[in-house]
Image 1: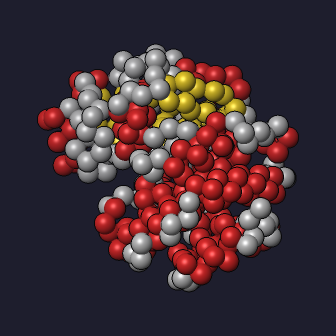
Image 2 (image 1 turned 90 degrees about the horizontal axis):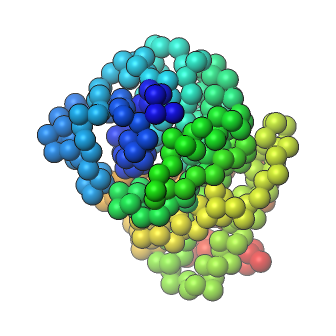
Length: 336
């Protein structure tokens, strides 16, 4: 694995955290970042100028470029860590074949407008075989990786041997990894947990206490189970035993819903305090994936008709502009 050529695609906090992990296992990486000024600052100061300032890098071991095709051509393994609203725009610039690449999606969202998980998008539009596609799930916040606090990742890939190899790439003395074959389940769960983190933050601002929050999250897990079972029923991954009590599902939901580092929880808190969606987004200056994920999951579910009262409630608040106080009060009557 230390001889494989690895590239990071994306310049945000999660991309930076994953680069930090990978560089403990390989001698050199390539790194696509959109802005040349950010690259120049990174090279001068040895850290990402916009994210995770606690993470220091030996930039002599990094080849930066704003040319995504150049970075792809130099790499065997691509770690895609671009926020979901910008994934399609970035990938449309690709002119190189991706069929022989191994691609790890670290995107915790779906492709907006077409409502596709990233692995399906890469398979359909770039003809990457599913066995060469992987996903990385938490529970893991980028900020704690920067501080080298003990963290856990789950690596999903239909090819179990490749999943084990990628676990080696993304493991070190403070990051433990577990392989999984449930790519779709992990990917959809990673989308949905952001919605429930918004709900948790919103309810906190509305002064709902810990007792209610525990019921909210236990119902969230039930929603994830119902939805993932329905959406994957005709796919091969539905044959795998999906245990939502494992850390890649339940653990990821918990840390995203409760952590001070969770931008989705922060976004929900601001909505609960009376901020408009635009005002909250402007003040955060970061992407809250759950905002986009809410619309994607809601629209996919219009066909599936799965019972998702929490998702429906957050959709009504964020997109139909209904009163958070009234919507959450009505939700309390639907939870068990």
